[in-house]
Length: 129
Image 1 (cartoon, rainbow, N blue to C red):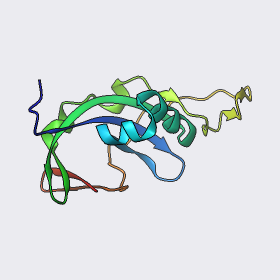
Image 2: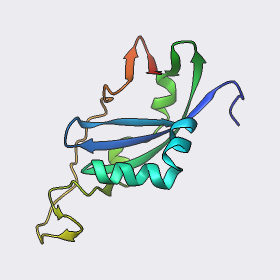
Image 3: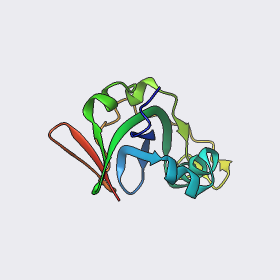
Image 4: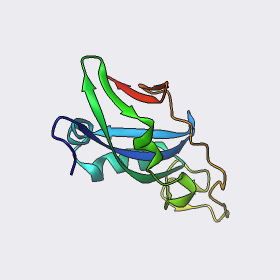
């Protein structure tokens, strides 16, 4: 069980048409603001080619945001070891119907973190407010 002073976050790996492969981190406040986990996943589905849940991480709050240790992310499975769901922006989809084209999930997905409010420096991941 996590310490009460720590911040819990859900981590997803996404392949975005705008940003390419990267992580999306949702803290409890983010999930509640979006209407729950299901609603947050619908946003991921609508905005990305692929997305997959990697797990939970815990960070330390500070006045400048929340800091996540590299060791928290190291415990998560690699993106190619998780089930990736297809997003609606995938080129194989046209609206909600299949075009009939076949496709493969990328076998080598980068584990680089997207720069949307998240940075890594000296082994720490920081999600700024």
